[in-house]
Image 1 (spheres, rainbow, N blue to C red):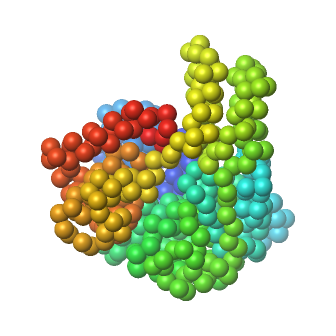
Image 2 (tube, rainbow, N blue to C red):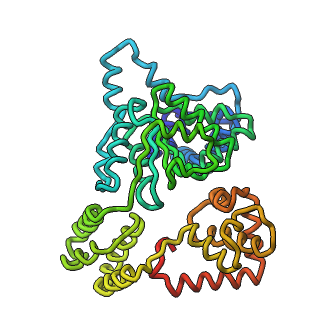
Image 3 (cartoon, rainbow, N blue to C red):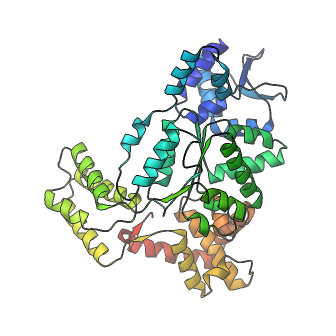
Length: 437
């Protein structure tokens, strides 16, 4: 029964990372017919609870007992399954079988879904090399560019293309590292991220100022280099601009390949629009509309996707796209399109309280500076997708609890609420001018 359950569960997990966690679990059934989830440490238990617990419970209840419970058992003697070691040890005596396994470790067809142009051709070419021959060339591969240009999408494509890869964003890396330290279980964290041929770490600019995790990243990169494995890093800043990173970490990165992804070029924008038009039966816009749209200067895929989504929804609701396109032309010709970035919010808050932006991010605790900082943190939480940890890093390397405290202060103060309403009204009145609201 348990073998059948594991098979059904694995079949229901489409994410490769989730399947990795399944390999860290043992299953038992107790006298009450509840499912016992056996793990080797509190760190793994915590990770399982966040990643796949709900799926485990739903599959077990649906297939076997809809009233059953799922409970954890932490057994430090439990031996986890390491799929990658298993692949490397099975059938080693049969050379032909090993060759077959090697030939099927990657699938480059996922790259066919990417739009390629002069803005990203080098990064995509390097990424393909990493997938085909991990650890051979471009190691580490460092990709940088402004938000929305496709860095994360490229890393996710690499993960999909390689059967021995692991993607992790900066927040998850940091949380797992801290959890491993607190629970004296850091070895499990290291084993988790080092068990693959290609490690992909996103948004590493958020590690700036975090000495411990920066050191761990440095040692992880060394491990991959020494074991002929690949590391791919993504950031919104070039390595030389990551002030606060250990010099040896920057040096190690510069020893590989550093390449940027620029804003989407006209060729890519044209391909995106034409593909969307074909998918909509050729009725999304006219030839003249296409030429007009291609004359606009978009800075990111997010802007482009926003335009395409608006074109589609207008068509579906019977609203003419002519007016929308005319408004776009007017806004872009007057340089009024603005992206709701941390930098924009920081500048706004510093102007409201008439304090320097650097002071807002400093340790200064004067009333005006603190108020500007509280408002900045609150608006970041309210109007961006950044996590509390990421906001803390942006706000001068402040802790999770400090960020929560600032948010509560704003929510409980009428004076702050007034400033929040002014900002919200600004966005509402000028909503067409902002990307990412």
